[in-house]
Length: 169
Image (cartoon, rainbow, N blue to C red; front, side, top):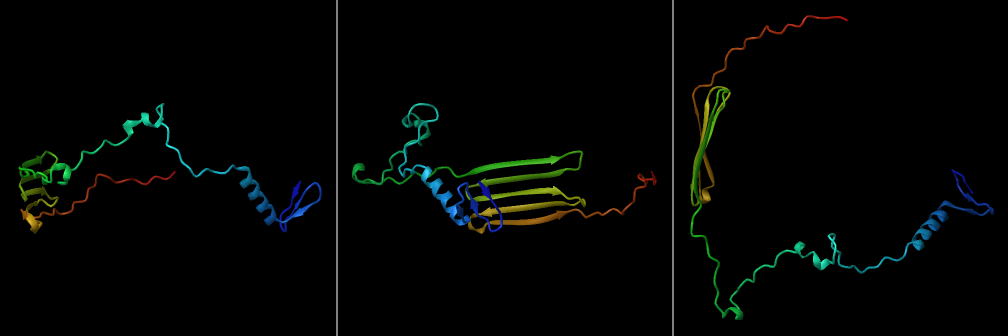
């Protein structure tokens, strides 16, 4: 069998000539007819741990408890969900001040919907930035930013510790 490029045609041992379009269609038809028809029905998957699909009951979500909407089964009584009796309430704080120049901290307290606190950080220019904030209901986050100290910018002093000498190889 010989296949030639260009205006190609297939020349078989018996001398029959076919165009590339006919060859492509014949190939597609051969592949389609060789594959048995696919079924459109699906079966339940089996368990990968052995046994039937029913054996893998641990993969199913747990049943939810019945919700009572006050229908005939409950005698017509509606019991609204119980709201929490305690309001959110907490206090925390932390501070870091080490020998490497790290100086920062945070303090916050919450009682119900009212939250207040502050945090601070030592800035590279020497000042202390302090943010005091409140969160009160629908007012959102209200912050007041203050700076303590005066910014210091030391004069630049070039270092003569590194002076490479030229080398030529």
